[in-house]
Image (cartoon, rainbow, N blue to C red; front, side, top):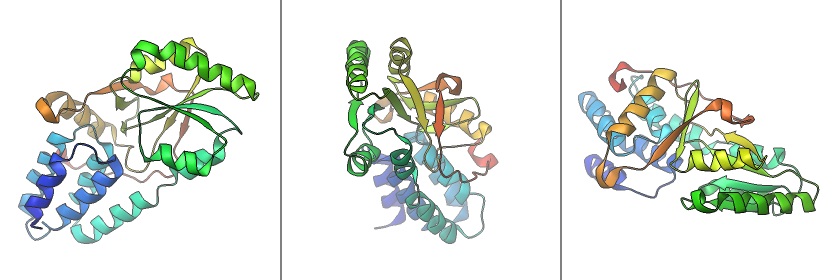
Length: 242
C-alpha cells in the first residue's frame, strides 16, 4: 500500500485501540522518511483526526525529532509492545477486587485473563444515568469478599496537572467520589506528554469536529488517589506540533 493511502486508512479508523493506532501511524510515517517536508503535514493531518490520542502525539513528536525516522519508528513500535500496564495492574490489585473500568480497551481482556478472580464492570457512555447504582452494586460485591471497590481510568493523554479520557469521565469520577470508591489513573506507554504538547493536544482536540470528533474530557490529576505508570518513556516537544 502506498504510504499516503496507508495514512488515509489510519486517519479514517474509528475503532483502533490507541496503542495500535500509534504503532500503525509510526510505520506509515516512516515510509515518508525520504520526504521530510511531507512528514510534518502528515503528522498534523493525523492529529486533526485523532487529537485525543496521546500515543499518536508521542509517536509524531519522536519521529519529528530524529534524523532516522525508520529506526525511530521501529523503536516506537517496540516501546508500545513492551507496555507492562496490564501486568503491573494485575500484580497490584487486591485479591477478588471489584473494579470498574472507564470504557472498553484491550486492558479489560488482559485483566480478565490474568486475574480471573476479579469482578470487572465496564462503564460506558450511559454511566451518567446509572453510575450511583453501579457503584453501589460494586461496593456490595467488594464488601462480600472483604475488598475495596475501585474505579480504574485508562488515560488517553496525561500532562503535568490534568489528563484526557472519555466524555463520561467527569460523571463517573464524581459518582465514585460520592460512593467512596477509590480512583486509580492508569498511564500506559505514550500517554504522558510534556505540558506544552498536552496543551496543544487539548486545543487541537477541541478544535476538531464533524464525524471525526471523538468526545473527550479533561480532569485534574488531583481527582485520583493513585497512579499506575510502570514504564514512562520520555517524549520530545518539537515546535512543529505546537
